[in-house]
Length: 275
Image 1 (tube, rainbow, N blue to C red):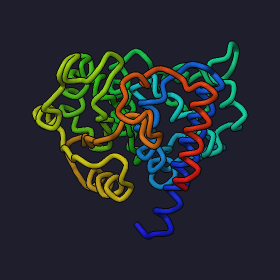
Image 2: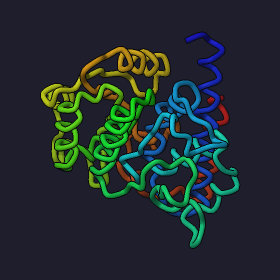
Image 3: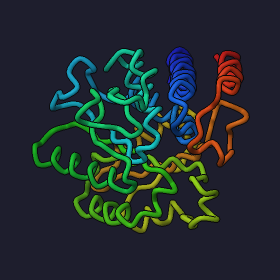
C-alpha cells in the first residue's frame, strides 16, 4: 500500500470515528466501544477492497458485507453514509422513532445493509448462504462478515463455521473483532473464548492473526484470504475497544453507553488532533 492510499484511509477512519461519536451523542444511546474498535476494518473494506456501487445497492455482482455483531451498527452506518449510500443527515436521526437508522441494522429499510442483525450468532450463517449462492450461481463476488469475540460464545457461530468449511466456501472471509471485552466484562471472565485461533483452525478454516487497526496488515490478510482456495478464512483482528478516544479505550463501561455533550466534545477534540 502506498503512503498516499494509507493516509487517505487514515483520514476516512478519522471521519468515521467523529461521525460515530456525533451520532451516538445525538441519539443519547447506542454502542461506542465495539463500533470504534472496528473502524479500520470497515474503512478498508468499503474504501479499498470491496466491489460495490452505492447508486445500485442491489447490484447482483456486488461484494457483500454482513455485520454479525449488529449492535456495532454505528460504524456500519457511518461508513455507508461516507460511501454515499444515503445522506449523512440520517446519522443524526439514529434510533429516533420512524428514522431509517435503528439500533440494529435493517436490510429492508437501509440501503447497503445486507442482513438484519442483532440476535448474535446469526450473521455468519447468513453469510454462508450468500457465499454458497455465489458458488452455485458462478458469481465472482466475495462475502465478508464481522463477528464479535464475545459473539463466539453463541453455538450458532460454530455450527456455521463447520458448515462453511464443509462447503469449502473460499469466497467467504470472517473478521473476528477481538477486543477482549463484552457487555458484562472481559471475555475471559464472562465465558472464555480462547484459544480463538486454534478453534477456527479446528473447524477447518484458514486463520490469520493481525493488528486490526493496521491498514497494511488488513490489506495483506485480505489478499491472503483471496489467494486461499478450498476453505474459508478467519482473520483474527486484535483490536482495542473504544479505539481512538482515550477515555473509552479498553473500558468495558463504554460497551453500550453514549457520550454526553461534555464527553462528546472531549472525544472530538482528541480526534481532531489525530487527523
